[in-house]
Image (cartoon, rainbow over all chains, first blue to last red; front, side, top):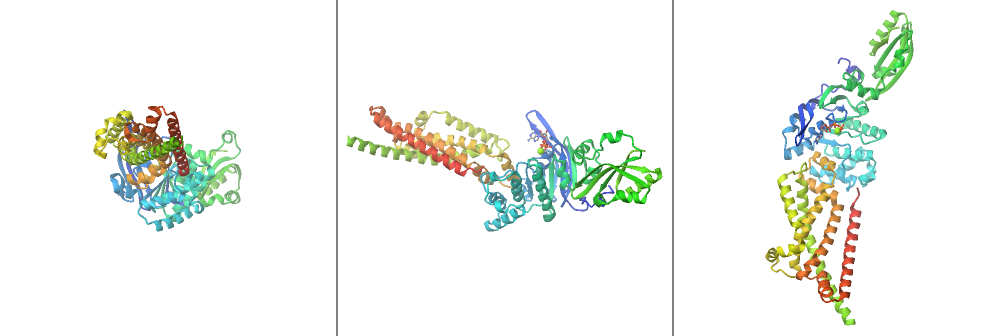
Length: 354
Length: 220
Ligand SMILES: Nc1ncnc2c1ncn2[C@@H]1O[C@H](COP(=O)(O)OP(=O)(O)OP(=O)(O)O)[C@@H](O)[C@H]1O
Ligand SMILES: [Mg+2]
């Protein structure tokens, strides 16, 4: 899409590929029964981006992400992480590769009988880091996730959000290139979810760690992802930048997902009523969202704009808004006005001709 | 009269020492046998870190066979083994062999059920970290189940006290032997009552200690 770069959202192109998944199939077999959870998935995650995979329950999201570090063995297909063919690895080689891939889970998966400190230090011990150096690293990690004071607490004494912070610190201990997140915020309330997402964003920015995040929550994608894939029935049915997905969803699934979060649907009664002027839906993104664009329009053209419906939200950090306005005036002037809006980088759609 | 009590006292003390020796040595050896048995039973299960159907089935069957033999028969049945190991078939030392055959597989099952309780998600997190099977046993399975393992050992210890009383009957000595020889066979009711009372206190004490230790170590 040619409109991508204008919005100032990193689109992940031009970097080097960190995770490459080719024609991935996964069949679960138990007894006579077989479930084909992945039906030929192709995916590329670029270095430094936050890549989201959304889909409803049973779409195969977890199966996909669990194949990336071989927690689940693919039935066929290829997975490369940092150029290394993961699918061909076994034993010690696989364990070494896994040390470069961090992972966090929906249910945190911490050692319940060990302190926060111990939970975070373990991967360092596994990697053969000396006691003293490891202890210092844990201090730094706990600082990063804002849990300096909790080193001696046990997981049972922490809130869900704090537990996930411990899990993040643990996952980052060995300086992985990638962080895999399987529904990492699904067990958390909205506010806590937000604070964890901010932390993930910060980690991505400051440490440059590539993040692959699996979720069924569209607001997670909207908050932090650069690019996103929509999964359904074991396949990726739509893929692109988050901005594309929200502004121009192609599949029904994507439309349903984005609608819930953006609230960008135009109320029906607005369309059913007849209007004197032209009903126009204006979608605007990026810096324009805060421009006094309608005043400028009225000043430049003899056209009046009456706002009937509006909604503003953010996609990652980029403002995104939708306005339904009624434009009244001479037909030619209205057309020129719409053209002007288009030139300003807005997307316009005439809903009803006057 | 005084003489009677003094004699009874010294008999009790000696029997208590014999029981304590039998039980403590047997529990240590049984734990050393049972712990690996339980670990192997768990990790060779389907979908676990060292899945191996045949090892799992074979070991499970062996344990079941040993566990289904009544202790009193087991004691007699393994007399040749006892003789080969300790050189004699009577006395406290000889009693330890059947006790280990009894408690080892039992502890194996207890350990198995404790380790099964460990959250699969945590094991998975460690696999994702690149931990080896041995590291998972050492860093996850054992530390996460320590409280439950201690309760298991406590149960096995109490079981061993009961079994050691039976072992006493074939010349192993100990409190059970005392109760049967004097109390039951010679109708000295007071000896029997006191012996049983000592056993009750012993069992209570061990169970309380085990519970306390387990709750101290449980943080989850
Ligand atoms: N270990 C397994 N054994 C058998 N079937 C499985 C297994 N794991 C997943 N499946 C099946 O594979 C399909 C995809 O499951 P998966 O967990 O990947 O979906 P998901 O998108 O993560 O769903 P959710 O949002 O509910 O977590 C489902 O039909 C599921 O029942
Ligand atoms: Mg899932």
